[in-house]
Image (cartoon, rainbow over all chains, first blue to last red; front, side, top):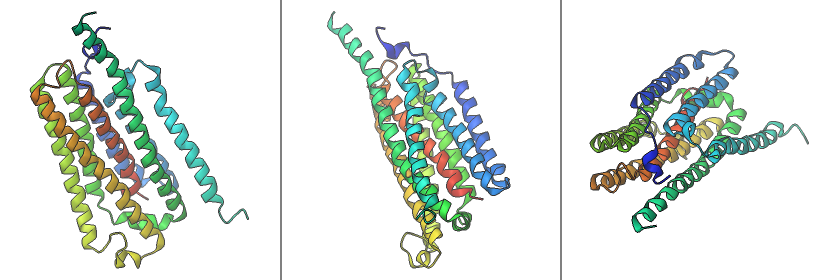
Length: 102
Length: 206
C-alpha cells in the first residue's frame, strides 16, 4: 500500500505482441471477409462486430481494463456505451420514421 | 509520519485519481466522436448507394496500411510503458520515439490521401463536389471532418509524447513515477480505437 506505482506488475512484452498479432489478423479479416459478405446489409454488422472485438482487445490489454481492480473502471465503458445506444436508438427512431408518421 | 512517507502516500493516492481523470476525459472524447458516428449512420441510412459509390473512391490499401501503422504504434507505446515500469529507460525511450514516428507516418499517409482528393477537386464546398449527388457531398463532408478531427488527435498525441520523451530523458518520469506516460498511452489507444471504427465505415462500404 506504500507505493502503488511500484507494486504494479508490468505486462509481459509477449502478451502485447500476441494482442497486436490478433489485431492485425482481425484487420485482415475485415478487409477480406467482411467486404465479400452477401447480402451487403450484413457486411456492416460483421465489420462492426470485428471492430468491436478489436476495441475490446485494445481496452482490455493495451489499456489494462482487464487488470483494473476498482469496479468503477469496469463499469464506465459499458455505461457510456449504454448512453450512446440510447442516443442511437432515439435518433434512428426519428430518422427511420420521418415522412411515415404524419 | 515523516515527510518522505507522506510524499509516497500522496503519490499513491494521486495514481488512481489521475487515471480516473484521464478515463473521464476519454469517455467525453468517445461521446464527441459518437455524435459524429450517429450523424454518419443517419445519413448513410438515407443515402446507401451514394455512400457506397463515394467510398469506392477512397484508397482502401492506404486506409488498411494506416490501420496497421496505428495498431503497431499502440503496441509500441504499450511496451514503452511496460519498459519504464521495468526500469528499462532507454528501451522505453526508443519505443516512444518509434510510436511518434509511426504517428507521423500515419499523418503523412493521411496528408497524401487528402492531397490526392483535393487535387481531384474533391474538398468541402468545391465546385466538383457540389455538382455531385447529395449523399456523396455528405459522405465527403463527414470524411473530411471525422478523419480531420481524428488526425488532429494523432498530432496532439505526438506532441504529448514528445513532452513525455523529454521528461523520461530528464529522469522526471522513471520506474517509480510513470503515470503521465501511462495516461498519454491511454489517450493514444483511444485514438487507435476511433480509427478502428473509422476504417470499415469509410473505406469498406459494400
